[in-house]
Image (cartoon, rainbow, N blue to C red; front, side, top):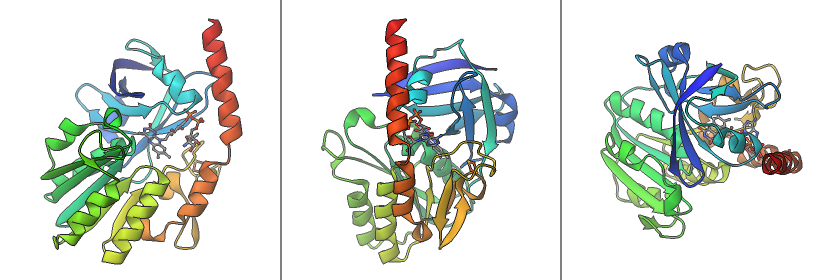
Length: 278
Ligand SMILES: Cc1cc2nc3c(=O)[nH]c(=O)nc-3n(C[C@H](O)[C@H](O)[C@H](O)COP(=O)(O)OP(=O)(O)OC[C@H]3O[C@@H](n4cnc5c(N)ncnc54)[C@H](O)[C@@H]3O)c2cc1C
Ligand code: FES
């Protein structure tokens, strides 16, 4: 059992949880994730370790409500417990001094980008952060990211905050300015990562993406997280979740992400009905 020591709503439908997990807090590195199961009948879902406090023995996860399990998690509060938290899982990010690094986070994908961007800054890189979301209420970790970024840009699709448009509009402006960029990191909806990579390929800039494929065991056993990278099948949970963004088959990823849409809707409706009845 892992106790929730803090819960905070940080944006519309997005909660931050600080959870007791001393061993994970001690071992985790940027880029890694946990798989949680709320209770005996719960499904297992992967969530990035956004932060950790070794002294307190806690990890922080940031979760957007998108379906049954994330909705259920959102009903928990400080003092409640999560049945299992397994991790740290996945390969840590390869961090070194590349030069200038642009970290692009779309929506809750910025929770995935955040620890990696911070790791890149700590390694001595010049860090440019771009945070994008559909609208102002969905922007997360702005102040926290500003605290360690050399430059920070915000974009919203509807123009309610920052620059009106997509993260790719801001990225293009920076790339066109002639600034030498050594690495781009991207995490967010698969479609966003696809378009970031199409752009950076044109400019010949190495790009790393963190893939959000569906996962079950997170240890390379079930094969659910299969992705195609450079024409080869990889398991995002053990080979990734980060890959060379120019090699990923995004169309296949998008197709696989939608595989269980019907079942996911049914599970969500059933959960909401049960909650209403209580
Ligand atoms: C390595 C990794 C790190 C992630 N980190 C975060 C994070 O920090 N914050 C965050 O909010 N989300 C994160 N996600 C996505 C998160 O796991 C899904 O949003 C969650 O599983 C949805 O579950 P649900 O039951 O609420 O929704 P559902 O209705 O079951 O699913 C909604 C959508 O979420 C995806 N999904 C569903 N089940 C899974 C699963 N078992 N594994 C992965 N994706 C699934 C599918 O695209 C699905 O269409 C991460 C995913 C991966 C692979
Ligand atoms: S989640 Fe089962 S093999 Fe990756």
